[in-house]
Every structure is written in structure tokens, then in C-alpha cells.
Image (cartoon, rainbow, N blue to C red; front, side, top):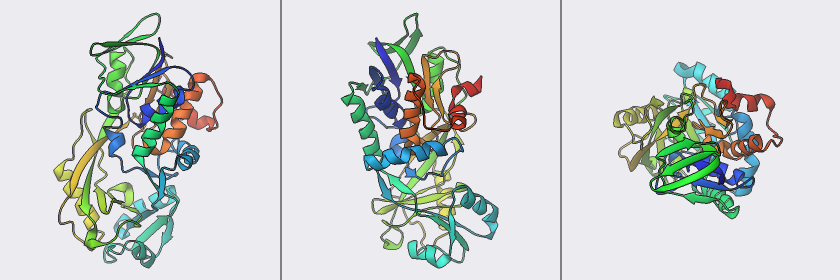
Length: 356
């Protein structure tokens, strides 16, 4: 009998496996050929402590030390660009993310392609970093395995049954028995809940598309900060000598292997182009991921209200990578009954009990 059977091998499931492997036996099941195949492997992955809902920010702050120790962060910076037409949204973003307004010349010193005929205000925050997502996933996976956890890829869950001893989970011809079932299935979390006879909570997968374009004008973009428009209606970020640009859309969809919508991508690229002097002439590649949110857009961490042996680790949305160290530790603390350093109101806001 396994103590913790985790369904889902993205950042939510792998970080949970690392933490829970200190409490008992762990087995993780991932349906795809590799860990982090879906959204976790397609993330733009920034660490910015003030990005997210009020309940997410304490998780971000509590995760910083882990990210530093794991050596997964590299300097990036965050640059907000706007104009008179977007003044209200610009002011809101700058205030919420604690960005300092800077001059156009300072902004152009960092990003020389900014069009000062279109952009008349900028705000900047140095304390934002790229996250090495693969290194972070492997860090958690290594810890889990060192603690005896078993990680199975190509293992798609077909059936879940509850009995007096715990859970019986079938994946093809293989059956697993576990005392606790951890639902970390990303866009599929409500489907897993339904299979298990647990009431779904109403999660919504939202598609977000990405385009990778050549470095604009042949510039060295390696030191450019991440740029975004007010209301996060587009963003751009350096990536291995090129630039990734996203329309930052949130189009509701069903759980699937996501792909970019060409029209949405074109609209987002146009919003980016409206702020710079270099046009987009070609795409190197494009892709999409599903950012899955609960009804209140806040993570769901902890035992289900009706069955404490069904444990939610879901709704990471766009905050999974940066919040994973603290979110997974909170999950372990909730299960073990150990104390947490997080504020009580944040823990309450993240609990599945809020949906009862």
C-alpha cells in the first residue's frame, strides 16, 4: 500500500512528490512520455515576488530561498511600457507589482527598439529573474527519487475506485493501491476528481500562445528585461538569442495538448509591434500551454472537504513555477500537521474548504 499516489508530472506533482517523500512512500504517475510535457514545460517562467493574487504572493516570497539554493534563477528584470491611452492600467500594474517609473531614455538604454512615438511611460523592477524550468523539475524529481519515490511516465490513469483501505488506481494493465490520492493533474484535475467520485471544483484551462521570433534588428537581446503591456495584454522575453512574444490571451478551452491559435498570435504580435521600431518578419516557432485556474483564480492546496484522503494540488495557473517550493511545502505541512511559516489568511485562502 502506497502512502501517497500522485497523478500528474508537472511542476505541481513533481514538487509534491519531493516534499511528500519525506513523509512516506510516494508513487507519481504521468501519462506522457516525460515529466513537465504540458504547461510546465512551455512556461515563460519568471520569478517576480509581487506577481499573482494576494494569496499567491506569500508563496512566491517563501519560495525565493529555495530557488536561490537550487541555483535556478538568472537576472532578467521587468519593464512595463505604456502611453496615455493605457494610463489607468499602467498605473494599476506599476502599483501592484511595485515597479518604479523610469525615463524613456533609461528604458531605451535597456531596450533600444522601444518606439518613443508610441510609448511615453515606462516602469521597471530589477528584482525579476528567469527560472530554469528543466533544472527546477529535475531538482524536485531527484529529491523524490533519493527518498525512494517511484516516478512512472507513459502511465495514463484509466480508472479510480475507493474502498475501505484507500484508493485503487488502474493505468492500463497496472494497478496501484494507495492510502492517499494527490490530484496534481493540471488541466485534467476535475476529470481526475470525477473518476475518483469526488465533486469537481470547476477548474478552467485557459490557453496561452507563444511565438519565438529572431532577435529584432539583430540586437543582442540577452540582457533585455521582460517587457509587457498594461493589463498584461502582451509580453516579450529574451530566449536563447531570440525573443518570445505572447499575446497573453486567456481563452477558455478543454484539457488537451494545446497549440497556438494563429489569429490570436497575430493579434498579440501586432500589440507588441505597436510599441517597437522593428517589425516582426518571421516566426521561428510557436506553441501554446494551458494555464488552469480555479473559480477564484487561486491555488487549491490540501485535503478535499468531503474526503481527506483525496488531496488537491491544483489551480497553479500562471504561478506554478515560481510558487512551487512553498506550495509543495505547505501541502506537506497540511498533511503532516506540521507548522507553516505562511500567514494564516493565505493558508485559508488556498484551502479546498473554501468551496464548501
